[in-house]
Image 1: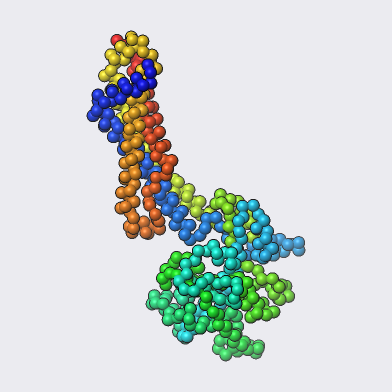
Image 2: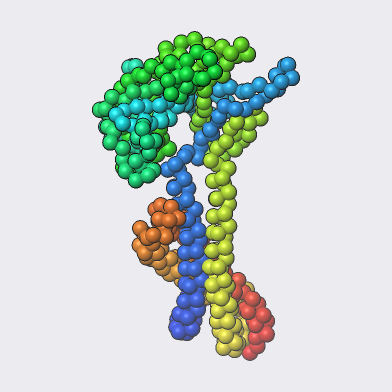
Length: 452
């Protein structure tokens, strides 16, 4: 018997029993829809989580901080420092695309009635070009001018009324009356001298009184975009400036004296070279981040990345996705039982027809193929309709949860139900296979018992 004949006969037999066929197909539709929607929900939650995390920190970056130690030739532990030689060493490593050193420095700012604390970051021009910082006023600092400050939109959170030490923000949720772009900001780089000079600068132990440090007016070059109190960037409370300009200014201010935060030799004198506070290593692919992080740690440095805890979250989401898929599979199992029941009843009703087909010389494989094709058709139709219904249900779910308080609290961005491209054809193939398996068992049993 030709394939075309089997195809025509299977469609004809299904059409003769419309109600039974429709009910069986409906079971497959429910099963496939359940699987696709459940898997899509798990996929949407995972992708939304990754999208949300990518807004705060890159998943292909490694952060390296000073503070690691190694055993020197003298047998004593010495600190591993972040210098230009280490930058070049990192750039020569496989999978490293770029290295961005940072120089962090804390200073005091005074303007009008207020005293503030500035968390200053000297960064390279190469990194500034990749940071994608929104600008409300002015521009980012460049290397063609003297030291200039680019203020984050939340820098004023760290400003206090000088006499009362009361913070307008932390006490009253109000913004200090300071214009960082236009008011003259007096910056004190030597905090030790500033606090030592308070109360007249007399230590009370007969030692030399501490003089008040010099104040410097640093021009503002720009301001980060964003509402005050809005956390949209890692540097919202920081001040950015050009790395080389900050180095030059610190050396000019402190001259041959130790620079706060910088190491000194055994004789207490500063090194000629300035060491970095941290570095960011840009890796070519997320898959290589963990291995590079371990390698840098083995070298004695303090390195970490967001991949470690993000991977834990991904594993949790994969588990949730598997559980949701298993729940949908239960509905598909019920559909498979329904197909088995339908094919069993069909074989019981057509026992004489099967016997006649045997007498006429029809091969047993052709008879089995007829019933398998009928079961496969039920699976195929149910799979196609189920996938189509899944897309419709996905749109409804995304529309209902969009902008809801629940998704806002969970920090979910984008669609919560996302059907990957590979899932639709796989679901249809799965429905056909389940249908044929469900139809094979009764056909194998009953055809052998058929008689004229």
